[in-house]
Image (cartoon, rainbow, N blue to C red; front, side, top):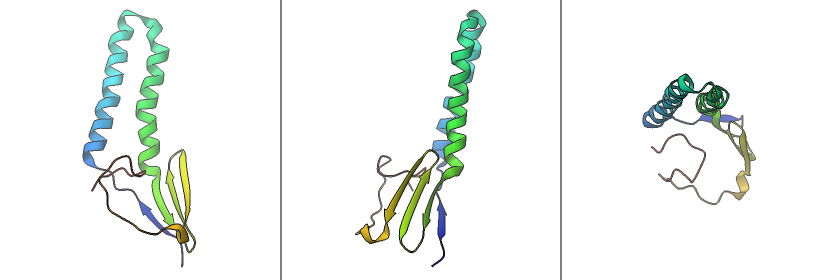
Length: 104
């Protein structure tokens, strides 16, 4: 069987929350940096992380299934699960249960 790739769906609400958080960090840095320029280096790191991490994770969360292994990738994280070890698959809406960007 050729490798099948499944990309994670991204919930709109998650994308909106991440965008609001990133914009809030940017506004906070701009506001605080006006009164104290020492904030700029830390603020720049905050903005880069709040924009960069989702930009890295969103397009790079996927599931690759081949004959023997399920490969799960979510940006810096990865898991390899032998298909023979899978005993059941159940639907869940728990955000802590898997590297998924959607609960639906």
